[in-house]
Image 1 (cartoon, helix red, strand yellow):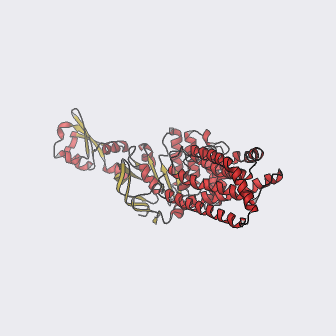
Image 2: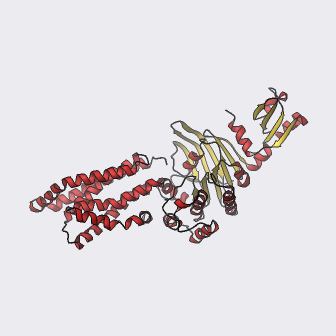
Length: 199
Length: 285
Protein backbone atom coordinates (compact mmCIF):
# COMPACT_ATOMS: atom_id res chain seq x y z
CA UNK A 1 0.00 0.00 0.00
CA UNK A 2 2.82 2.38 0.93
CA UNK A 3 4.32 1.72 -2.49
CA UNK A 4 1.15 2.91 -4.15
CA UNK A 5 1.45 6.14 -2.16
CA UNK A 6 4.97 6.52 -3.48
CA UNK A 7 3.66 5.96 -6.99
CA UNK A 8 1.59 9.14 -6.75
CA UNK A 9 4.62 11.12 -5.63
CA UNK A 10 6.83 9.71 -8.40
CA UNK A 11 4.16 10.51 -10.97
CA UNK A 12 3.75 14.05 -9.72
CA UNK A 13 7.29 14.94 -8.85
CA UNK A 14 7.29 17.88 -11.26
CA UNK A 15 3.87 19.12 -10.15
CA UNK A 16 4.86 18.88 -6.49
CA UNK A 17 7.21 21.84 -6.98
CA UNK A 18 4.12 23.89 -7.74
CA UNK A 19 2.28 22.70 -4.64
CA UNK A 20 3.50 25.40 -2.24
CA UNK A 21 3.07 28.27 -4.78
CA UNK A 22 -0.43 26.86 -5.50
CA UNK A 23 -1.31 27.10 -1.79
CA UNK A 24 0.29 30.55 -1.52
CA UNK A 25 -1.98 31.90 -4.25
CA UNK A 26 -5.00 31.01 -2.11
CA UNK A 27 -3.34 32.26 1.07
CA UNK A 28 -2.88 35.72 -0.46
CA UNK A 29 -6.13 35.95 -2.41
CA UNK A 30 -8.69 34.50 0.00
CA UNK A 31 -9.52 35.34 3.52
CA UNK A 32 -11.29 32.12 4.51
CA UNK A 33 -8.69 29.63 5.74
CA UNK A 34 -11.05 26.64 5.44
CA UNK A 35 -11.11 27.16 1.64
CA UNK A 36 -7.36 26.86 1.55
CA UNK A 37 -7.52 23.55 3.42
CA UNK A 38 -10.05 22.27 0.88
CA UNK A 39 -8.15 23.22 -2.29
CA UNK A 40 -4.82 22.09 -0.85
CA UNK A 41 -6.31 18.66 -0.07
CA UNK A 42 -7.62 18.37 -3.65
CA UNK A 43 -4.23 18.86 -5.26
CA UNK A 44 -2.39 15.52 -4.96
CA UNK A 45 -5.28 13.01 -5.18
CA UNK A 46 -6.92 14.74 -8.16
CA UNK A 47 -3.65 15.21 -10.00
CA UNK A 48 -3.04 11.48 -9.51
CA UNK A 49 -6.42 10.76 -11.08
CA UNK A 50 -5.61 13.03 -14.02
CA UNK A 51 -2.31 11.11 -14.53
CA UNK A 52 -4.09 7.79 -14.34
CA UNK A 53 -6.41 8.93 -17.07
CA UNK A 54 -3.55 9.50 -19.51
CA UNK A 55 -2.79 5.79 -19.73
CA UNK A 56 -4.78 2.71 -18.97
CA UNK A 57 -3.40 2.57 -15.44
CA UNK A 58 -6.13 0.18 -14.27
CA UNK A 59 -4.77 -2.37 -16.71
CA UNK A 60 -1.30 -1.93 -15.19
CA UNK A 61 -2.41 -1.96 -11.54
CA UNK A 62 -4.64 -4.99 -12.04
CA UNK A 63 -1.90 -6.91 -13.82
CA UNK A 64 0.49 -6.31 -10.93
CA UNK A 65 0.03 -8.43 -7.79
CA UNK A 66 -2.60 -6.16 -6.26
CA UNK A 67 -6.23 -7.07 -5.66
CA UNK A 68 -9.10 -4.79 -6.64
CA UNK A 69 -9.88 -4.38 -2.95
CA UNK A 70 -6.35 -3.09 -2.33
CA UNK A 71 -6.45 -0.74 -5.31
CA UNK A 72 -9.69 0.95 -4.23
CA UNK A 73 -8.73 0.92 -0.56
CA UNK A 74 -5.47 2.59 -1.45
CA UNK A 75 -7.28 5.33 -3.35
CA UNK A 76 -9.39 6.15 -0.29
CA UNK A 77 -6.75 5.67 2.41
CA UNK A 78 -4.14 7.42 0.24
CA UNK A 79 -6.48 10.38 -0.08
CA UNK A 80 -6.85 10.53 3.72
CA UNK A 81 -3.07 10.36 4.10
CA UNK A 82 -2.45 13.16 1.59
CA UNK A 83 -5.22 15.20 3.22
CA UNK A 84 -3.39 14.94 6.52
CA UNK A 85 -0.15 16.02 4.84
CA UNK A 86 -1.91 18.96 3.18
CA UNK A 87 -3.39 20.05 6.53
CA UNK A 88 0.09 20.07 8.06
CA UNK A 89 1.60 22.03 5.16
CA UNK A 90 -1.23 24.61 5.01
CA UNK A 91 -1.16 25.07 8.81
CA UNK A 92 2.58 25.66 8.67
CA UNK A 93 2.21 28.18 5.83
CA UNK A 94 -0.62 30.02 7.60
CA UNK A 95 1.43 30.21 10.81
CA UNK A 96 4.48 31.40 8.86
CA UNK A 97 2.50 34.19 7.20
CA UNK A 98 0.71 35.04 10.39
CA UNK A 99 -2.76 34.25 9.06
CA UNK A 100 -5.13 33.22 11.85
CA UNK A 101 -7.08 29.95 11.58
CA UNK A 102 -8.92 27.61 13.91
CA UNK A 103 -9.48 23.88 14.26
CA UNK A 104 -12.95 24.60 12.93
CA UNK A 105 -11.43 25.87 9.65
CA UNK A 106 -9.48 22.62 9.29
CA UNK A 107 -12.57 20.53 10.10
CA UNK A 108 -14.85 22.33 7.63
CA UNK A 109 -12.17 22.50 4.92
CA UNK A 110 -11.31 18.81 5.18
CA UNK A 111 -14.99 17.83 5.41
CA UNK A 112 -15.79 19.73 2.22
CA UNK A 113 -12.97 18.04 0.41
CA UNK A 114 -13.91 14.55 1.62
CA UNK A 115 -17.53 15.08 0.59
CA UNK A 116 -16.38 16.20 -2.89
CA UNK A 117 -14.14 13.12 -3.08
CA UNK A 118 -16.98 10.88 -1.85
CA UNK A 119 -19.18 11.98 -4.72
CA UNK A 120 -16.58 12.13 -7.48
CA UNK A 121 -14.62 8.88 -6.84
CA UNK A 122 -17.55 6.54 -7.66
CA UNK A 123 -18.32 8.74 -10.70
CA UNK A 124 -14.82 8.07 -12.07
CA UNK A 125 -15.71 4.37 -12.14
CA UNK A 126 -18.95 5.01 -13.98
CA UNK A 127 -17.71 7.45 -16.61
CA UNK A 128 -15.46 6.33 -19.38
CA UNK A 129 -11.82 7.21 -19.60
CA UNK A 130 -11.44 10.57 -21.29
CA UNK A 131 -14.08 12.30 -19.19
CA UNK A 132 -12.21 12.26 -15.91
CA UNK A 133 -10.29 15.49 -16.45
CA UNK A 134 -13.54 17.24 -17.31
CA UNK A 135 -15.16 15.91 -14.14
CA UNK A 136 -12.17 17.05 -12.09
CA UNK A 137 -12.26 20.58 -13.56
CA UNK A 138 -16.04 20.87 -13.14
CA UNK A 139 -15.89 19.49 -9.59
CA UNK A 140 -13.08 21.90 -8.74
CA UNK A 141 -14.72 25.00 -10.20
CA UNK A 142 -18.11 24.13 -8.69
CA UNK A 143 -16.70 23.39 -5.27
CA UNK A 144 -14.53 26.51 -5.17
CA UNK A 145 -17.44 28.63 -6.43
CA UNK A 146 -19.81 27.10 -3.92
CA UNK A 147 -17.34 27.40 -1.10
CA UNK A 148 -16.53 31.04 -1.79
CA UNK A 149 -20.22 31.93 -1.96
CA UNK A 150 -20.98 30.33 1.39
CA UNK A 151 -17.70 31.15 3.08
CA UNK A 152 -19.15 34.12 4.95
CA UNK A 153 -21.94 31.99 6.38
CA UNK A 154 -19.47 29.30 7.37
CA UNK A 155 -17.27 31.84 9.16
CA UNK A 156 -20.35 33.29 10.81
CA UNK A 157 -21.41 29.83 11.88
CA UNK A 158 -17.96 29.28 13.34
CA UNK A 159 -18.19 32.49 15.37
CA UNK A 160 -21.72 31.53 16.46
CA UNK A 161 -20.49 28.16 17.64
CA UNK A 162 -17.64 29.64 19.65
CA UNK A 163 -20.07 32.04 21.30
CA UNK A 164 -22.96 29.62 21.82
CA UNK A 165 -23.74 27.27 24.65
CA UNK A 166 -23.80 24.18 22.36
CA UNK A 167 -20.68 22.20 22.88
CA UNK A 168 -18.56 23.01 19.82
CA UNK A 169 -16.52 19.87 20.20
CA UNK A 170 -19.63 17.63 20.06
CA UNK A 171 -20.84 19.35 16.89
CA UNK A 172 -17.40 19.19 15.38
CA UNK A 173 -17.03 15.48 16.19
CA UNK A 174 -20.51 14.81 14.80
CA UNK A 175 -19.62 16.56 11.57
CA UNK A 176 -16.35 14.67 11.14
CA UNK A 177 -18.02 11.35 11.93
CA UNK A 178 -20.81 11.98 9.39
CA UNK A 179 -18.26 12.90 6.73
CA UNK A 180 -16.23 9.77 7.43
CA UNK A 181 -19.39 7.63 7.19
CA UNK A 182 -20.20 9.24 3.80
CA UNK A 183 -16.59 8.63 2.75
CA UNK A 184 -16.78 4.97 3.82
CA UNK A 185 -20.08 4.47 1.96
CA UNK A 186 -18.48 6.06 -1.10
CA UNK A 187 -15.67 3.50 -0.91
CA UNK A 188 -18.20 0.66 -0.69
CA UNK A 189 -19.93 1.94 -3.85
CA UNK A 190 -16.62 2.44 -5.67
CA UNK A 191 -15.41 -1.03 -4.69
CA UNK A 192 -18.66 -2.71 -5.73
CA UNK A 193 -18.40 -1.06 -9.19
CA UNK A 194 -14.64 -1.60 -9.54
CA UNK A 195 -14.73 -5.26 -8.50
CA UNK A 196 -17.03 -6.10 -11.42
CA UNK A 197 -15.36 -3.91 -14.01
CA UNK A 198 -13.68 -5.19 -17.17
CA UNK A 199 -10.44 -3.48 -18.22
CA UNK B 1 2.00 -33.15 -18.29
CA UNK B 2 1.66 -30.29 -15.79
CA UNK B 3 -0.65 -27.50 -16.81
CA UNK B 4 0.26 -23.89 -16.13
CA UNK B 5 -3.09 -22.44 -17.27
CA UNK B 6 -6.43 -24.26 -17.29
CA UNK B 7 -9.72 -22.78 -18.44
CA UNK B 8 -12.80 -24.93 -17.93
CA UNK B 9 -16.22 -24.14 -19.37
CA UNK B 10 -15.55 -20.40 -19.44
CA UNK B 11 -18.41 -18.20 -20.60
CA UNK B 12 -18.32 -14.49 -21.19
CA UNK B 13 -20.68 -12.34 -23.18
CA UNK B 14 -20.32 -8.78 -24.38
CA UNK B 15 -22.65 -6.93 -26.67
CA UNK B 16 -22.00 -8.45 -30.09
CA UNK B 17 -19.44 -11.03 -28.98
CA UNK B 18 -19.42 -14.00 -26.68
CA UNK B 19 -17.16 -16.78 -25.53
CA UNK B 20 -19.15 -19.95 -25.12
CA UNK B 21 -17.90 -22.83 -23.00
CA UNK B 22 -14.19 -22.22 -23.60
CA UNK B 23 -11.87 -25.03 -22.54
CA UNK B 24 -8.16 -24.50 -22.81
CA UNK B 25 -5.02 -25.82 -21.19
CA UNK B 26 -1.45 -24.61 -21.53
CA UNK B 27 1.42 -26.97 -20.77
CA UNK B 28 4.07 -25.98 -18.27
CA UNK B 29 7.59 -25.55 -19.59
CA UNK B 30 6.69 -24.71 -23.19
CA UNK B 31 6.07 -21.78 -25.51
CA UNK B 32 2.44 -21.72 -26.57
CA UNK B 33 1.31 -19.44 -29.36
CA UNK B 34 -2.24 -18.20 -29.54
CA UNK B 35 -3.43 -17.32 -33.03
CA UNK B 36 -6.65 -16.19 -34.61
CA UNK B 37 -8.06 -13.34 -36.67
CA UNK B 38 -8.83 -9.91 -35.22
CA UNK B 39 -11.82 -10.09 -32.91
CA UNK B 40 -11.57 -13.87 -32.50
CA UNK B 41 -11.25 -13.69 -28.71
CA UNK B 42 -7.48 -13.77 -28.15
CA UNK B 43 -7.23 -10.57 -26.12
CA UNK B 44 -10.40 -11.40 -24.19
CA UNK B 45 -8.98 -14.78 -23.22
CA UNK B 46 -5.67 -13.22 -22.15
CA UNK B 47 -7.51 -10.57 -20.15
CA UNK B 48 -9.56 -13.24 -18.39
CA UNK B 49 -6.35 -15.08 -17.48
CA UNK B 50 -4.95 -11.81 -16.09
CA UNK B 51 -8.24 -11.16 -14.25
CA UNK B 52 -8.73 -7.91 -16.16
CA UNK B 53 -12.02 -9.31 -17.43
CA UNK B 54 -14.29 -11.39 -15.22
CA UNK B 55 -15.75 -14.53 -16.81
CA UNK B 56 -19.52 -14.89 -16.38
CA UNK B 57 -19.02 -18.53 -15.37
CA UNK B 58 -16.46 -21.33 -15.44
CA UNK B 59 -13.22 -22.27 -13.69
CA UNK B 60 -9.87 -20.68 -14.28
CA UNK B 61 -6.71 -22.06 -12.71
CA UNK B 62 -3.17 -20.79 -13.00
CA UNK B 63 -0.29 -22.84 -11.56
CA UNK B 64 -3.06 -25.20 -10.40
CA UNK B 65 -4.55 -22.45 -8.20
CA UNK B 66 -7.93 -20.77 -8.49
CA UNK B 67 -7.21 -17.42 -10.13
CA UNK B 68 -9.48 -15.41 -7.82
CA UNK B 69 -8.64 -16.99 -4.46
CA UNK B 70 -4.90 -16.82 -5.10
CA UNK B 71 -4.70 -13.71 -7.25
CA UNK B 72 -1.69 -12.10 -5.56
CA UNK B 73 0.32 -15.31 -5.30
CA UNK B 74 -0.34 -16.08 -8.96
CA UNK B 75 0.52 -12.59 -10.23
CA UNK B 76 3.80 -12.62 -8.30
CA UNK B 77 4.89 -15.31 -10.77
CA UNK B 78 3.54 -13.77 -13.97
CA UNK B 79 5.29 -11.33 -16.30
CA UNK B 80 3.01 -9.50 -18.73
CA UNK B 81 3.45 -7.60 -21.98
CA UNK B 82 0.55 -5.93 -23.77
CA UNK B 83 0.34 -4.45 -27.24
CA UNK B 84 -0.86 -1.07 -25.95
CA UNK B 85 1.16 1.14 -23.66
CA UNK B 86 0.09 0.81 -20.04
CA UNK B 87 3.04 2.69 -18.55
CA UNK B 88 3.04 6.38 -17.71
CA UNK B 89 4.41 8.15 -20.77
CA UNK B 90 6.17 10.96 -18.94
CA UNK B 91 8.25 8.61 -16.80
CA UNK B 92 11.63 7.13 -17.63
CA UNK B 93 12.70 3.54 -16.99
CA UNK B 94 14.35 4.45 -13.69
CA UNK B 95 11.05 5.84 -12.33
CA UNK B 96 8.99 3.04 -13.83
CA UNK B 97 11.19 0.58 -11.99
CA UNK B 98 10.42 2.45 -8.75
CA UNK B 99 6.70 2.01 -9.43
CA UNK B 100 6.70 -1.60 -10.63
CA UNK B 101 9.48 -3.18 -8.54
CA UNK B 102 7.86 -2.81 -5.07
CA UNK B 103 4.89 -4.88 -6.26
CA UNK B 104 7.08 -7.97 -6.58
CA UNK B 105 8.80 -9.91 -3.81
CA UNK B 106 11.42 -11.28 -6.22
CA UNK B 107 12.31 -8.11 -8.12
CA UNK B 108 15.96 -8.30 -9.09
CA UNK B 109 17.66 -4.96 -9.76
CA UNK B 110 20.66 -6.60 -11.38
CA UNK B 111 18.36 -8.50 -13.73
CA UNK B 112 16.62 -5.20 -14.58
CA UNK B 113 19.97 -3.56 -15.32
CA UNK B 114 21.04 -6.60 -17.35
CA UNK B 115 18.00 -6.34 -19.64
CA UNK B 116 18.30 -2.55 -19.87
CA UNK B 117 21.86 -3.00 -21.14
CA UNK B 118 20.98 -5.94 -23.36
CA UNK B 119 18.21 -3.98 -25.09
CA UNK B 120 20.25 -0.80 -25.10
CA UNK B 121 17.48 1.21 -23.45
CA UNK B 122 18.13 4.64 -21.91
CA UNK B 123 17.32 4.92 -18.20
CA UNK B 124 16.63 8.64 -18.09
CA UNK B 125 14.63 9.24 -21.24
CA UNK B 126 10.82 9.44 -20.86
CA UNK B 127 9.16 6.51 -22.62
CA UNK B 128 7.00 8.89 -24.65
CA UNK B 129 10.17 9.45 -26.71
CA UNK B 130 10.66 5.70 -27.26
CA UNK B 131 9.96 4.06 -30.61
CA UNK B 132 7.38 1.26 -30.79
CA UNK B 133 10.17 -1.33 -30.64
CA UNK B 134 11.81 0.33 -27.65
CA UNK B 135 8.49 0.47 -25.81
CA UNK B 136 7.95 -3.21 -26.36
CA UNK B 137 11.45 -3.92 -25.08
CA UNK B 138 10.79 -1.68 -22.08
CA UNK B 139 7.64 -3.69 -21.34
CA UNK B 140 9.66 -6.88 -21.63
CA UNK B 141 12.31 -5.56 -19.21
CA UNK B 142 9.60 -4.73 -16.66
CA UNK B 143 7.98 -8.12 -17.25
CA UNK B 144 11.15 -10.16 -16.82
CA UNK B 145 12.97 -8.51 -13.91
CA UNK B 146 11.13 -10.47 -11.22
CA UNK B 147 12.06 -13.77 -12.85
CA UNK B 148 8.48 -14.83 -13.63
CA UNK B 149 7.55 -18.48 -14.14
CA UNK B 150 4.88 -17.61 -16.66
CA UNK B 151 5.13 -14.88 -19.29
CA UNK B 152 1.88 -13.77 -20.88
CA UNK B 153 2.02 -11.49 -23.89
CA UNK B 154 -0.71 -10.02 -26.07
CA UNK B 155 0.56 -9.32 -29.59
CA UNK B 156 4.09 -8.46 -28.43
CA UNK B 157 5.62 -8.43 -31.89
CA UNK B 158 2.90 -6.41 -33.63
CA UNK B 159 4.35 -3.38 -35.36
CA UNK B 160 7.97 -4.35 -34.71
CA UNK B 161 10.48 -4.35 -37.53
CA UNK B 162 12.16 -7.68 -38.38
CA UNK B 163 15.42 -6.83 -36.58
CA UNK B 164 13.61 -5.97 -33.34
CA UNK B 165 11.43 -9.05 -33.73
CA UNK B 166 14.42 -11.31 -34.09
CA UNK B 167 16.03 -9.81 -30.96
CA UNK B 168 12.78 -10.21 -29.10
CA UNK B 169 12.34 -13.85 -30.10
CA UNK B 170 15.98 -14.62 -29.26
CA UNK B 171 15.42 -13.25 -25.76
CA UNK B 172 12.37 -15.46 -25.33
CA UNK B 173 14.38 -18.46 -26.46
CA UNK B 174 17.08 -17.66 -23.89
CA UNK B 175 14.43 -17.49 -21.17
CA UNK B 176 13.08 -20.89 -22.17
CA UNK B 177 16.42 -22.55 -21.41
CA UNK B 178 15.01 -22.71 -17.88
CA UNK B 179 12.58 -25.63 -18.08
CA UNK B 180 10.31 -24.26 -15.36
CA UNK B 181 9.32 -21.27 -17.44
CA UNK B 182 6.29 -21.09 -19.69
CA UNK B 183 5.34 -18.52 -22.29
CA UNK B 184 1.85 -17.91 -23.63
CA UNK B 185 1.51 -15.27 -26.29
CA UNK B 186 -0.91 -14.16 -28.94
CA UNK B 187 0.23 -13.06 -32.35
CA UNK B 188 -0.75 -12.53 -35.94
CA UNK B 189 2.70 -13.28 -37.21
CA UNK B 190 2.77 -17.00 -37.89
CA UNK B 191 6.48 -17.02 -38.76
CA UNK B 192 7.21 -16.02 -35.14
CA UNK B 193 5.31 -19.08 -33.96
CA UNK B 194 7.11 -21.34 -36.39
CA UNK B 195 10.39 -20.10 -34.88
CA UNK B 196 9.69 -20.49 -31.19
CA UNK B 197 6.32 -22.08 -30.37
CA UNK B 198 6.08 -25.64 -29.07
CA UNK B 199 2.28 -25.59 -29.09
CA UNK B 200 -0.18 -23.59 -31.12
CA UNK B 201 -3.74 -22.81 -30.19
CA UNK B 202 -6.06 -21.49 -32.85
CA UNK B 203 -9.15 -19.57 -31.82
CA UNK B 204 -12.06 -18.46 -33.97
CA UNK B 205 -15.19 -16.63 -32.84
CA UNK B 206 -14.40 -17.42 -29.23
CA UNK B 207 -13.99 -21.18 -29.90
CA UNK B 208 -10.78 -23.17 -29.81
CA UNK B 209 -10.40 -24.78 -33.23
CA UNK B 210 -7.22 -26.67 -32.38
CA UNK B 211 -4.57 -26.97 -29.70
CA UNK B 212 -1.66 -28.95 -31.16
CA UNK B 213 2.09 -29.20 -30.85
CA UNK B 214 3.99 -27.58 -33.71
CA UNK B 215 5.31 -31.05 -34.64
CA UNK B 216 1.80 -32.46 -34.89
CA UNK B 217 0.77 -29.60 -37.13
CA UNK B 218 3.79 -30.07 -39.37
CA UNK B 219 3.46 -33.86 -39.59
CA UNK B 220 -0.28 -34.39 -39.57
CA UNK B 221 -1.45 -31.57 -41.77
CA UNK B 222 -0.60 -31.28 -45.46
CA UNK B 223 -1.46 -29.15 -48.45
CA UNK B 224 -2.81 -31.08 -51.43
CA UNK B 225 -3.08 -29.73 -54.97
CA UNK B 226 -4.53 -31.44 -58.00
CA UNK B 227 -7.09 -31.48 -60.75
CA UNK B 228 -10.62 -30.48 -59.79
CA UNK B 229 -12.04 -33.57 -61.46
CA UNK B 230 -10.49 -35.74 -58.73
CA UNK B 231 -12.89 -34.37 -56.16
CA UNK B 232 -16.22 -36.04 -55.76
CA UNK B 233 -18.46 -36.70 -52.78
CA UNK B 234 -16.30 -39.63 -51.57
CA UNK B 235 -12.84 -38.19 -52.12
CA UNK B 236 -13.87 -34.86 -50.57
CA UNK B 237 -14.17 -36.71 -47.23
CA UNK B 238 -10.36 -36.88 -47.05
CA UNK B 239 -9.98 -33.13 -46.85
CA UNK B 240 -10.67 -30.66 -44.10
CA UNK B 241 -11.17 -27.74 -46.46
CA UNK B 242 -11.10 -27.42 -50.21
CA UNK B 243 -10.55 -24.35 -52.36
CA UNK B 244 -11.39 -24.56 -56.03
CA UNK B 245 -9.45 -22.51 -58.56
CA UNK B 246 -10.85 -22.92 -62.06
CA UNK B 247 -9.80 -26.46 -63.07
CA UNK B 248 -7.67 -27.17 -59.99
CA UNK B 249 -8.18 -27.54 -56.29
CA UNK B 250 -6.10 -26.79 -53.20
CA UNK B 251 -7.04 -28.50 -49.96
CA UNK B 252 -5.87 -29.20 -46.44
CA UNK B 253 -5.84 -32.74 -45.11
CA UNK B 254 -5.18 -34.31 -41.76
CA UNK B 255 -4.52 -37.69 -43.41
CA UNK B 256 -1.64 -37.09 -45.85
CA UNK B 257 -0.77 -40.81 -46.02
CA UNK B 258 -4.30 -41.83 -46.88
CA UNK B 259 -4.49 -39.10 -49.53
CA UNK B 260 -1.20 -40.32 -51.02
CA UNK B 261 -2.53 -43.89 -51.11
CA UNK B 262 -5.79 -42.79 -52.69
CA UNK B 263 -4.53 -40.40 -55.37
CA UNK B 264 -0.94 -41.55 -55.98
CA UNK B 265 0.88 -39.28 -58.41
CA UNK B 266 -2.26 -37.47 -59.45
CA UNK B 267 -1.92 -34.96 -56.65
CA UNK B 268 0.95 -32.97 -55.15
CA UNK B 269 1.25 -33.23 -51.36
CA UNK B 270 3.23 -30.42 -49.76
CA UNK B 271 4.12 -29.33 -46.26
CA UNK B 272 1.63 -26.78 -45.09
CA UNK B 273 2.55 -23.49 -43.48
CA UNK B 274 0.87 -22.25 -40.34
CA UNK B 275 -0.42 -19.33 -42.35
CA UNK B 276 -2.18 -21.73 -44.74
CA UNK B 277 -3.64 -23.72 -41.84
CA UNK B 278 -5.03 -20.48 -40.41
CA UNK B 279 -6.34 -19.51 -43.82
CA UNK B 280 -8.15 -22.82 -44.31
CA UNK B 281 -9.66 -22.88 -40.84
CA UNK B 282 -10.81 -19.30 -41.21
CA UNK B 283 -12.46 -20.19 -44.50
CA UNK B 284 -14.71 -22.74 -42.83
CA UNK B 285 -17.76 -20.61 -42.34
